[in-house]
Each structure stands twice: as C-alpha cells, then as structure tokens.
Amino acid sequence: MKKLIARIWRIIRGPVQWRILWLAHAKFMVGVTGIVRDDAGRVLLLRHRLWPEDRQWGLPTGYAVKGEEFTATVAREVHEETGLEVKATRLVHLKSGYKLRVEVAYDTQLVGGTLKIDSFEILEARWFTPDELPDGMQESHRCLIFGQDPNA
Image 1 (tube, rainbow, N blue to C red):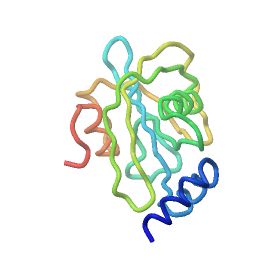
Image 2: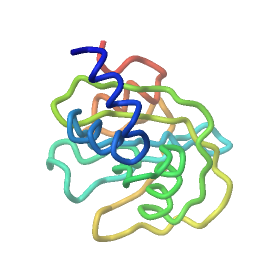
Image 3: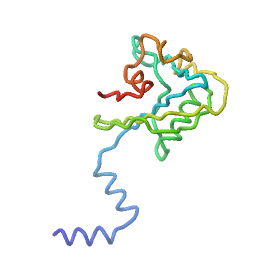
Image 4: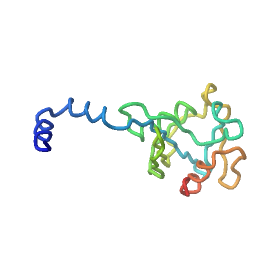
C-alpha cells in the first residue's frame, strides 16, 4: 500500500500535490512585529486603538498577507501605521505553538519617511528611551526591546 501511495504521489506532482498538502495541514496567521530604533537608541512605540485599554502601548505590529515575505510585512506594517520607511535587519523572535498564530519579530533599520500615524489603528506614536518605557505596554514587546525571550 505504501508503494502504491508513493507512486501516485510522484505521478500527480505540482499543483495537485500542493493542494493536497494545503488541505491536510494546519493554517496559521502570522503576526509580525518590528522593533524600530532611531539614531539615539530610542524605540518607537504606538498606542494602538484596538488593543485592550490597559495594554495599548506596543511596537508596530500586523499580519502577513498571503505570499508576503515577513521582512516585507514589517516594512509594510510600519509604513501603514507610522509613515516611516524601515528595512528588517535581524530576526529576533520566532514562536509557534499557538492555536492559529505564529509570531515573528525583527529588528529594523530606519531608512526614511516622516512620522504620520494611521489614526484608525493608532492613537499616538512616540519615541522612548529603553529606561523610560510607558506603563500599559505589552510585556512581550518590552522583552523584545531588551533582547529577552518574551516567552520565558
């Protein structure tokens, strides 16, 4: 039986194989976060309108769209939320194990743009030194800023 299945698998190749694999495996949303620092070492934090009121401060964050590389997601989300242009430089966090989500975070390099928030999603954007982070901040994002494992 195993030989027959292997033979059929080799025959169907390409798109049909991919469709079968897609149907047979779990699907995930991928949340991507960017750690944006300026030349003075300050970190950009956003007060997110749609987050819980006691934890609205956090890093620029969003979800990857189908077919998008995660480094492109970071650049897109930061630009959409802040008007700033960034380039993802170093993967600093990758976590799976949630029911439907994978988390990815990158350090970024600020390369241009002018700070202008998307007022639908973002209430406020401010630069903070690491020793002056605001209350009401996502603890996992605080860990990312300090290079710590947010799941420890």
